[in-house]
Image (cartoon, rainbow, N blue to C red; front, top):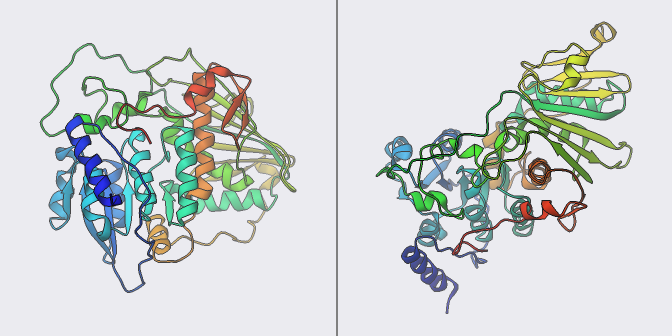
Length: 433
C-alpha cells in the first residue's frame, strides 16, 4: 500500500467517525522556494490572529493557495479577499489534496489544535509559522521542536514583539552589563481574566461552525459560545490561560537577554486550581542553572491585577511595563515600548551601549526569507520551543498544586507525581499520534 493511499483510507475513516486522524512521514522532499519564485502558503485558522497573520504574510511574492477554517462566518472576509484560494474546513483533507502544491503552512487555531496540523506539516517537509504558544502541552512542544530540527524546515513562533526596538534596546542593556550581574528577574501580566462560569445550557451549534472539527483532539462536550470563538483561552481543555496567552511574549525578553533555555526547578501558587478553568491570578518561579559566565537565575512570572509585590516595594509602576531585571548595580524596568534604568539618578547621564541586535525586516518577513533559504527567523522553534516549554511548565506546577524538579531531557517532573498527567497530551479516540 502506498503512503498516499494509506492516508486516503484514514481520511475516509475519519470522515465516517467524525474525528479520525493520521500522521506519518512524507516522501516529498524539502524544497526552499527560490528568490524569484512565489512561496505557496496554506493558512489554517483565518479568524482573529489568523486574519492578522494572513494580512502580514500575503505579500506580492506569496501565493495563498489554501484557506482552512472550521467557522465559515469568521473566515468569510478572507474567503472574499482570496477567491482563488482553495477552501477547506478540515486541514487533513487539504494536505491530502494539495500536498505537492504547498511550500509552507501557517497555523493560527486555538491552542489545543496547534499540534496536529503543525506536526503533519513538518513531517511533510513544509515550512511552518505557528501562533503562540507552540502547542497545548509540554510533550507536544518537544515533539514539534525535534521534528522541525530533523526536517530542517523554516519555523517561526508568533512572538511578534520580538522585533520591537525598545525590546532590542532592553536586551542590549542587559547583555552589555548596564546593571551588573543579573540573578533575578520578575515578569508579569495584569488583569484578572480567567475562571469563567460553567455553562448550564446547551444551545444549538451555529450553522456556520463545524463543532466536531473545532474540538479536534479535545474530549467531546456540547457546544457553547463561552468556548468559541474566543473564550476557549480560559478552559484547560482548549487553552492555557493568561500564562500561555502572554507568557511567550513577555518572558521572551528575559529568555533572550539572559540566554535561558530549560529550568531545573518550577514552583507555582495561586487560587485553588479548578479542573476545567484557568485561574484569575497565579505566581510562578523558575530556577535556571548557571551556564558559562552567566550565574544561576531565578525568573518569576505573575498573573496579577496590580503587578507583583516587588513593584510596590520599590514604588514602581506596573502599567506599561512587564519586566523587571534586578542586577548587582541597578535595575531595568521595561515593557514592549519603553524601558527605564533604576535608580534614575544613578543612570541619568548614562549612554546606551552600541546596537548589537540588527533591525528586523519584519516578523513575518523573517519567516518568508527563511523559507527561501535565508537566515533562520529569530523565533524559530530551536529558540521558541524551550521558551514555550517553560511557559507551559508554569501551568503544570500550578495545576499540580506545587513545584517539582524538572528533568528536561526526560520530560520528567521529579517530586510531584500530580504533575505527570499534565506534561503529555491525552487525545480523544481517532486523534492519537
